[in-house]
Length: 184
Image (cartoon, rainbow, N blue to C red; front, side, top):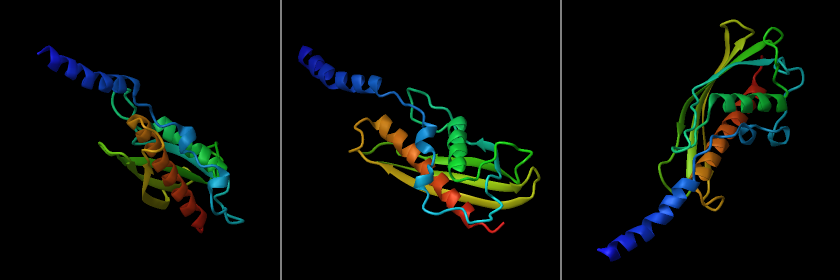
């Protein structure tokens, strides 16, 4: 019986240590924001979108519980969106001055349960309105996957966080590319 207890302790102790040291952290906005150099295209000259998009609402995110899994909060998603729109020369911080109002909804963050490489797919709906009105100018739902590899980090909680951040970043990048193509 003592032998079985020793084996059980030897097998479970490393798992407990791994669990305790591997607390989940929320996605960080700095890792989800797009920089100017990451955009492969530019805003067309004369576009009315230039410095004219006010971000009114970002919803659908959820807070991370340290003992559960990494999530993307509304605040972090909004901060990443604001910084990305600034980098893309689209953001206007004043709701009264801007020609367009943006609402973004994180509909789903499809996360793996287990695996070596974690692929997260974010599903986000973007709605662009004329000024502060209800006149919808553009609506698009984007699904973007991102895979964080086992070789990047051993810890599953960190890998999931990286996959969350990468998926949201790719989603925002794709959204900005759609905006650059708009003829409004």
